Length: 223
Image (tube, rainbow, N blue to C red; front, top):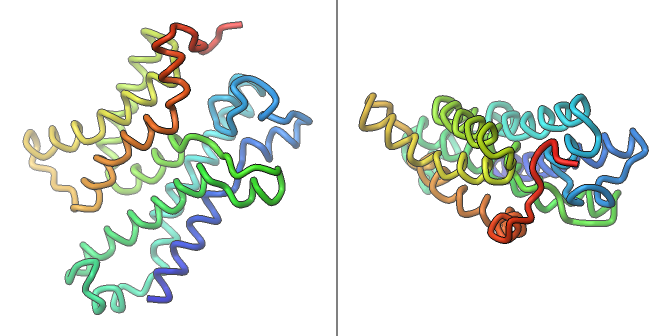
């Protein structure tokens, strides 16, 4: 199972690249000292502006997508299937490997070893953009529906955190709708991740949830 371990390691190290801090440093700004202090795309957008913020989002999104679509292919599926613990069918084993790779990238984004080595802190972003990239590689239609939820919530409230949380919560509901409404099947690992990720997103946004409840959360575009 050496190849699977390698996939996990590469995915984690890829996900751990703190692009918001890298872009911020290139512009002479330490994002941890401005805005919310978070090393994610939202704070980059708020502090650095639309161009750099969009660049950070695309790079963070790309980490998750690359882990699923590219890094996961390094695994020796014959060995994975032979081991038996990720399923006896190549398609199911491939789905598990891709999900594990994407999960490693998402965890790397939140708990970043590169951030610790070069920026002095393990704390990365909240995992929304990287998780969205991962799921785009696994369940693109469900992610599209979640993006609609995010856009609607943002248009109505201008709370990025609330949009992110509700978009994450919509993922398992979207999979259910696709399954029962259109007969679109998703492999078990996608169901598991789409069920677990809302809780993880809420946990990484726990400070935002407190501010939302207290009425002190910042709106996008607010001074």
